[in-house]
Each structure stands twice: as C-alpha cells, then as structure tokens.
Image (cartoon, rainbow, N blue to C red; front, top):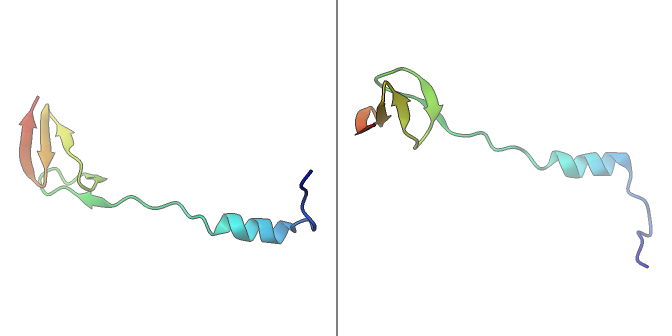
Length: 59
C-alpha cells in the first residue's frame, strides 16, 4: 500500500493552502440607481431590469 516517505510539515501544508486565493467579483456602481452590483448582470428595480444604465426589460 502506498504511503508518503516523509510526513509534510504544518508550514508546507499552510503554504500550499495559502496559494489558492478567492477571486473577487467585479463590482460597479450603476449610473441611474447608484447601487453597487456585479458587473455584466442586470439590476432589478421596481419591476424593471436595468443594464448599463438603461432599461433592458420590463417584468
């Protein structure tokens, strides 16, 4: 049965885990509503979907 030749230290394990960072989503402020939301996504306000500062769709 396979087993490691040498046990990895706690510092090596933490170094490996530390290299995997969480990506921060792109956020921007809408021109009309001044709300911050995810980039390239529509924003629902009063049954209207706004995208790039314009009305995209009315629900």
